[in-house]
Length: 555
Image 1 (tube, rainbow, N blue to C red):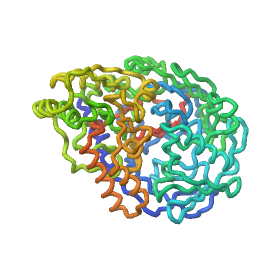
Image 2 (cartoon, rainbow, N blue to C red; image 1 turned 60 degrees about the vertical axis):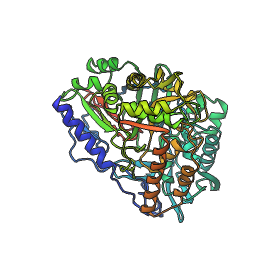
Image 3 (cartoon, rainbow, N blue to C red; image 1 turned 120 degrees about the vertical axis):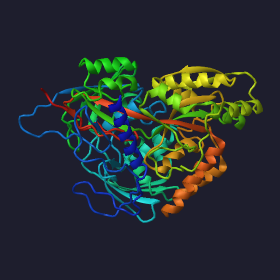
Image 4 (cartoon, rainbow, N blue to C red; image 1 turned 45 degrees about the horizontal axis):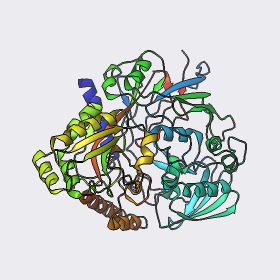
């Protein structure tokens, strides 16, 4: 147990360093090999550099930025296929679908599709991917120069028309990852097949970073219009979809016509195993090669075990309680204050994830690794008497309230919250659901949703708060609409001065803390565990892991 605590503290310290990352105003992103060196703008904040010389065994924990590189010796052989377990089902392979927002979906998108840009966790830069370079004078109008050697999985050439089509489809699908990434675009002009001008609604130095997120995936018009389901799978990525069953597995096969470096693995089989204990047993028995999420209670058998490699990271996804701001009961501030003071974060975190969690220590609803967190906002502390006083002032009159939760550890945390709310007299019924079922009934504007225990998908750029706080955005499950916050979220996009940007984001957090649409509970320490022959995994604190380089040596 002492060993686990040491590892936990180390991971949390690394996450703390990540939160201190600074923006690099005006820095040029690195061009792709052979690209021009035209000035480009990238100010994406990123984790602090990881320690050198990572330990590739169970006695140490690899963190973001640490990658086990492949041995290129002639006598090293690599496995043809790798088996990977996920805790969430890949409901759809379509970043333009409102049901495809889970972490397992995002990992898949990274392999099937490419984006114009890519966020390099090793150098903390936004770099070209399908673009070779880009330039902008005002961070509002961008000229992107595109690769001319890329083909889709169906053989079609990638051109600027595909960028326009991707944007147009995104605008038809509010609530999707793609909608969030492309929404800021107001004008797209094709200069030639491999050059495009993109204008956004206001200056935003994080635009190139936003395009690097999974929702920035470029899709194929001919395939999608011919078949909206399987056609949606056609991208330009290093792998293509060769088998799919949303309740069981997703099989990905190497795209041998890929424009970039070919993966060493031919087939990846991602399997959905919802039972936490089953995933651990399969790892221990050699029934799988990689588990993207090991349950906290199972981690002691892997820690300090040389037969396994552990990756640990404090995911920048705040586990929170969301209140509907349009439901007659939960829209009452006194009710929200009653719940806030009734919840014991330490108990919720402990029940949910054991010691593999970090309870929230201030009153800000913000990503732990997202820049400009306002740590001066006081925490609404656990206080039963205050909770009862606020409840007495509220409109609540004994109604049965519904708490929707995600699966696995989220459901465990939900059970604890139900009991804690009952202590002060709130009658709560929990409804635990898988993510594809949860998403459509917790969308913006749904008056039937009351409370939700889920995760806030903060990214490594502060503008990611917009998707949770701005009207009609995909993760604004509180149906939150504060005109003053909206104005500030719009205003900050056009400001270049870092100190002014920081002040605005801290003011936004302060205003949100008064309203309490979301109540931060804890940051989970997530773990990926593999057998010792697996490498090439590039983890990211926002859970957009890149597995394109994954490999497994043959014994």
